[in-house]
Image 1 (tube, rainbow, N blue to C red):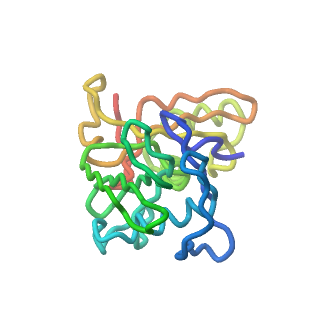
Image 2: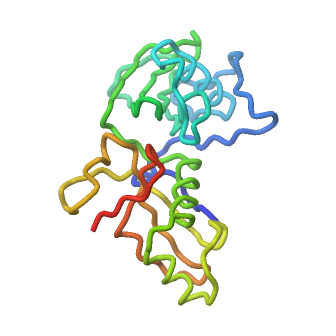
Length: 220
């Protein structure tokens, strides 16, 4: 099994993008669709390339695994209310070096970023890679997390691999309803929802995973 949905707390209508081939993003402008048509995979890849290599993103930006370049979160069409014309895309990125989110509006025809919104507190939905890493960190943690005990009680074997469960992850921000986790909001944190193959949901509401520090954060 494994992760079912990676859009976090709000699935929205964002384009899902899977890297194929050698994994390189397209650097040449692809055939463009109509202004409000859904983004093609080629357009999405090109938008990610333009957004992540723009001068507004620091050259030392890193993704959730510490590799060069920001973490890609999602790409979608801008809201009509934003008034952008032509073939444009909004691309959300997260820079783990500086814990900053970037919303980049890309003019696909011109091949350039026309608007940048930078935030040290905005926490968009998690990417597939972030969710996978959060699950891995939770399983491998030495912390006494109840969901691992629940899994073994239900399934008769220990939980040692993410493929043993189904899971989703959403961005989590401290909102004063828990006694701990105040760092989440400035740091990038993810809350997991985990179920067994038989459909039993495991209790994961007593912790979140701080992806910025790659540590478990108790919330209760």
